[in-house]
Image (cartoon, rainbow, N blue to C red; front, top):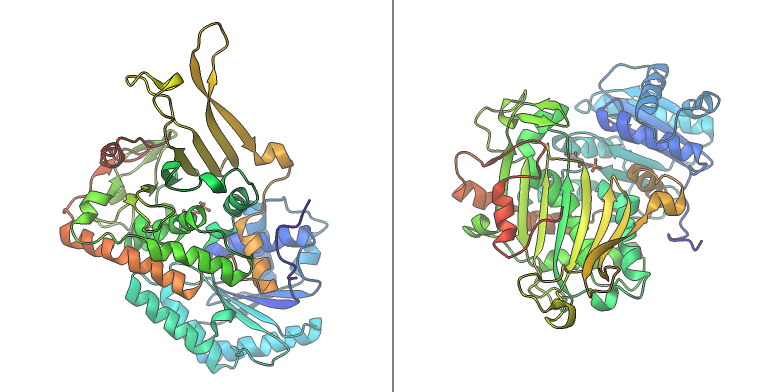
Length: 503
Ligand code: BG6
């Protein structure tokens, strides 16, 4: 099979995880590293150093990692292999607020690297709340751990998790502070949707096939829907979510990045900055939604009490750690336009929410109707349009709706679906997003990461919507029953256009 990615190789390095005993580390990062290890994809030489306030020994950290892997790993833990993996895991205790923590960390890193004969390449993964990012970066710098780019033989890189800020100003502040210490080429801002196999496939579908690109424009496409629905409620992350809401948590990053991949112009190469420029151009073309227009182009809502798959769901405002008069949205739907030639007049409908009927992410492209002749002469019963569905998760694949003749002597037509499923076609499970992303940082490939300008452009578009909601919003948000696909208002948003959500 032809190689998809670039020839960059992951380099021997030490990965330092700030917040090493936290949720992200246990659920995603340590299992991802273990899977890479099993697949023989990690560099020949490496170490993983967890750090955080919790007082742990190396053995405690290894135990914690084992539990995380047992519970969350894509491939099961193998007892024969585990000892080899865990011997490269280490722990350093220390609070982010204490300058001494960084000095302790530096001393331990020097020690581990000398013992393992590691070159001193360091990656600092900041799996910590956004409010602590600046603190950590400054701490690294003061302790001499943030080596600047230059003629060094070794590298230091920093990985930052979303959310970066909560509006344009705060995002700028964080970016500015980080850029005082690290060069943009050293900063890897994660949007884990970009690491998903099926999301990367969006580019392959578009640009490795000759049939799509000629019709990928306003002349042939009626509208596009992007849905990321989740069956879970806010779960254990209530206090974070209450401050964020669906717009900040999902649209500002994941949904807008999906939009970028669907709508971008063909990049002239796979070079990180060329691809990122192409994605960035989409963000530049977003038509602003400001002032009272938020009422016309957006819908926000909260889930009420009920059940999803027979599991009781308290209404959002009754969840623990949520204000009883909260106006944080757990659902958002948006109609948007891109002001460029390719997408002139084509509406894009985005929706995402918690406690919905099912976990499902997909991009659905509706093509224009055929002319009203031949098989489409009855205006009462128009032919269904062709629909291309790009399935991101949990189903992974693609389907295309075409109109076919019903067998028999009459000229009767019926829509049929053509399917492609990843599992069936390739027979191997897709790697987790974090596996690919960690490897890319070790290789120094930033294509699947967010550049500063893109983060800020997303916030520049999102912030006026937040402001509009504040100015023109109602005291109570509309509600939707858990286990449905959202509020009636979202149906109206799309139906007022003569269209329907894909089901
Ligand atoms: C995270 C959000 O970025 O993405 C969560 O903070 C959300 O609220 C999650 O549940 C969804 O990711 P995935 O990979 O499960 O679709």
